[in-house]
Image (cartoon, rainbow, N blue to C red; front, side, top):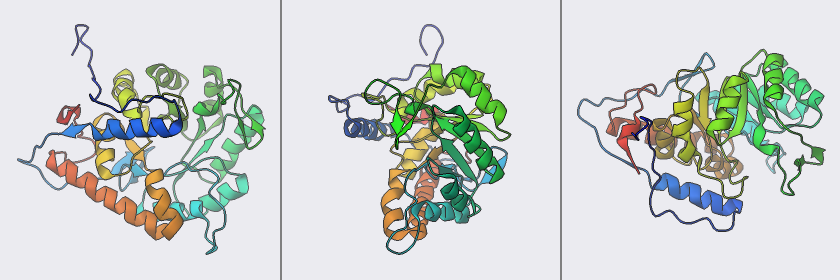
Length: 315
């Protein structure tokens, strides 16, 4: 604790410096940050842990979730669509599924798998498109919808353009309007500061995703650096805190959960098995992650996903 009585979260020492501001360097930094967090052992009275997790009022088998991939729903050589394949894995494993930017027809195909899916929508300049996509997702039984707030800026210092479609700003008033338009929980994805987390809460968002979109912001901090500060700022609220970026093992997931996340998305970690083996590859990867998560929970006396304790971590 510092003199003001606030928690102090020092970062790991000896991190590889990020010198270029490029996404690849940000990912190296993020990976190094994760790997420099170490764990003490608390095994007396430890028992086999329960991974079940409640999110948006529904029960899932694990706090590990599918990612909000975009533009992967192309037919491969075997006739399979990758985004449908990982949705099927989510359905079979009873995990929460996420989908990024896709046409309505593609989203409908993914939703038809029966996976409980969150649809993340880009911050289109044309607000009518956002509202239409919210409505379409809700009609296709989305568990939640949300918006990629980190796609507001483009690389030229102007509003972003994605697939030729112009993006626009996202104000607190915009978020309030989107929340009001959605009968299901609304998520702000791409939060990397206490300020944005608090603004999302004040706008009525049910959840945020702490993320730098794998290095989208030049010289971006690691999501786990800001996570405990966000957890502290949102203490006492009902806002769910999700995390992504570099969640490649159950050990990574454990560290994020111990620092305050309610659940984590695994993205690039499933990409290779997804493209090589489809649904089975994703299932095998996530099942291995569940084993690693349960292993570390058992080594530290964590009996369920409501009992994580950040004091087990060393930086």
